[in-house]
Image 1 (tube, one colour):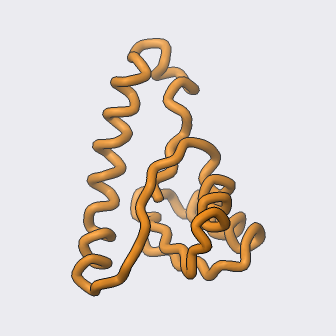
Image 2 (tube, helix red, strand yellow):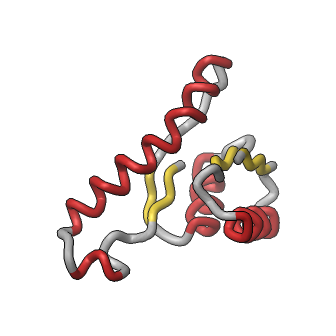
Length: 103
């Protein structure tokens, strides 16, 4: 799952259209996720990919509950150490589904 902050929040929205911001975020996230998706595809692992907007941990937990996911794989290669720890901690506390973070 690709979780993005709403593009109309933040300073960039004062200078760029919402569509332009979404396109930039989409390109950046797809680039970051392509390697992880390629590994899963090569291994024949079925997965569901989607894009949502909102707080990271809450959005992931809600989608996991909605899709009845067996496991959550988080690609944290683009996150800093403290953000990784914060997201992982929030996920472990908010759901029973196993979480694996790759970085």
